[in-house]
Length: 147
Image 1 (tube, rainbow, N blue to C red):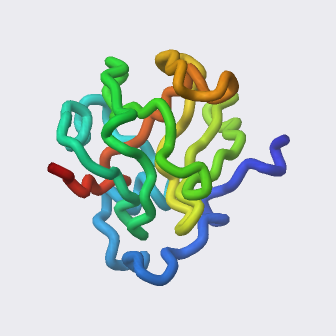
Image 2: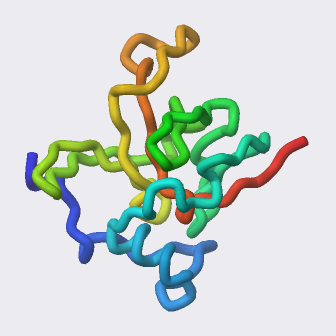
């Protein structure tokens, strides 16, 4: 489905409540708006084990709970499932000659990372949602810590 592939120019501008394009940190803009990737093991949340809610760094949408974060050894924060499927969008990504599934914030269109089928099995989840690894760029996240 190449027609489902979004191009950099197709990303919507930040919506109400989020930073406008000129206000974004250059690295956040490069990753979220230009579909870039942080260098592995460089992100601020790779080794974070604090409890809380990971939100979109642009619009504040709740994306992932720390309860689903795990160490994948890949160099990026990894989660077994989003906190609310309504807050993310999945799209086929055929860039770089590889078929992958891109993860975007549904509220503001920010590129967050990719999801892969090599995550841990979680028997609490329905069969079709087990074994996922949401590999997310730290710069696209803000952690709201909970006690």
